[in-house]
Amino acid sequence: MTYLELYNNIMRKKSFLCIGLDTDIDQIPDHLRTKEYPLFSFNKAIIDATIGYAVAYKPNLAFYEAEGAEGWKQLEMTVEYIRKKDPSVFIIADAKRGDIGNTAERYAKAFFVNNDFDAVTLSPYMGKDSIAPFLKHQGKWAIVLALTSNISADDFETLPLTGSIQLIEDLSVLYDSEGLYYTQPSSVGAPLYKSVIEKSMRWGSINNIMFVVGATRPQKLAEIRMFCPNNFLLVPGVGAQGGTIAEVARFGMNKSCGLLVNISRSIIYASKGEDFAQAAAEKAEEAAKEMALYL
Amino acid sequence: MTYLELYNNIMRKKSFLCIGLDTDIDQIPDHLRTKEYPLFSFNKAIIDATIGYAVAYKPNLAFYEAEGAEGWKQLEMTVEYIRKKDPSVFIIADAKRGDIGNTAERYAKAFFVNNDFDAVTLSPYMGKDSIAPFLKHQGKWAIVLALTSNISADDFETLPLTGSIQLIEDLSVLYDSEGLYYTQPSSVGAPLYKSVIEKSMRWGSINNIMFVVGATRPQKLAEIRMFCPNNFLLVPGVGAQGGTIAEVARFGMNKSCGLLVNISRSIIYASKGEDFAQAAAEKAEEAAKEMALYL
Image 1 (cartoon, one colour):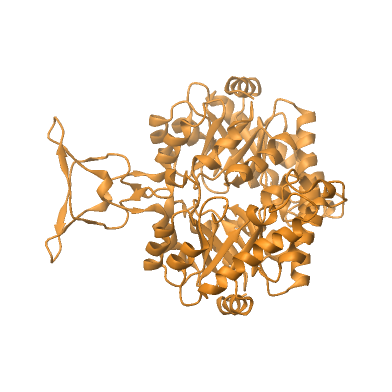
Image 2: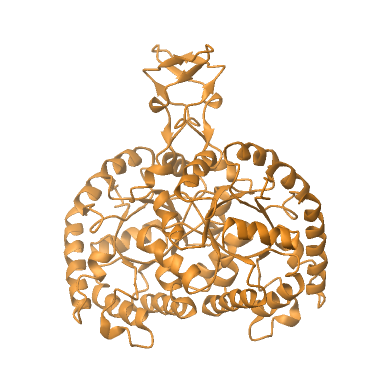
């Protein structure tokens, strides 16, 4: 799928909603647990009920791998089902993979050849070698983790780098007992996630590189739009984690929308009863209606 | 497995060899490809031939996921087979996962509960949230990517940080046209991978945290031993990528060995013919014999 096709799908559905299929065997309604394919049965009902409101679905692979080979099979069935139901839907493997060379190529095969995912989420830690193999697949996307929505994103993602030249208006110099001096570190350095975005933007194009930026720090979306105006952003953290659609749209939207806002638990687990799909549809409709206001 | 048990296994086998089961359906001998379980058949023969020389095996998940549910099943069969053959062998899921909270817990379930892996490789980008859930599992290990063996490790892993105070013996200050000044960035900052090691060392203990450090930059092993003297290091990059056992031992060994040196392709694909297992055994024996010299 190209950037323009994704934008057209968003405008047609009047929604930039991505539904996270974090389908947890311990969270799905009891009556589904005895089915032959419980994860798929749940997903099928959710998809049937919400596909009018969602431009994207994002299964998180952890929940399928936790069920072993049977889980992997149900992941494959889910992708096939979405594709058959609405070929225009953007399907994201939330895998957060990050490996290199022939290994990365095997992951690309798993997601893009054996399964018809449109995109895969990737961790940038190992650099270009871990992203580039995914970009060789025509029409497929790499979604690179940049600034995630969790608290410990501050452990590394926001650490300041000396790699890029930074303006220092108030440079403090301290002398130690031997007369050697230190800088005051807090005043310098762009954060690691900025370097991740700036570098990896150049490895592909707006047609195949997207970034994960959490909704939990909406002002950061505005900062990121200063140096990354055009790429799509995949935005988790709305709902259970505290972000809002309004803030994400205000700070993160560009002239081609440029946003996929992911909501998982507050849609798919809106009800734990037999009405779970209907409850999910209501939540998805509510989110999509709000999104339409901003488009 | 504890640190001490791992050390004892190393001393008993006189080897710190980890064999990477990067079992690629396109690389295994032709006569295996028609079997019901080609990846497992290959692995079984390799394991039977090499288990006397290896203290650890490391399947890379990409190669199994590329074969879908059938591949996942053969991964499970491989882990069971190793465990039955020699319960003391350390089994690493080379998954390079990195996700948070309940998602990370699901991955931990997949590797540590549903399958009897001893360890999983993890990407540190998202911080403590993505490592800690794995450390809750008694006797299991998190192996955190630090300085990897690929060229593009320099994209992010070695970027200098201003987060830690660094000695600057030669601070250059430049003035711009408005009289504002800049630092010369190259002279400051510890690399990102140092921060990764220093922080994540504290999230667990030497009994459950290990780091990936590539053999391709042996001098860096000596530097890392300055601030991380005790943790085990998992060292890829020997063989096909150019690192040597001698250099890794010289710069990276500590008083409890502290090393697992991984070799994949140059052992498992030593021959592409029907004698592949015998050829692998010869290469593994050769590596183990060299390792014994350094123990």
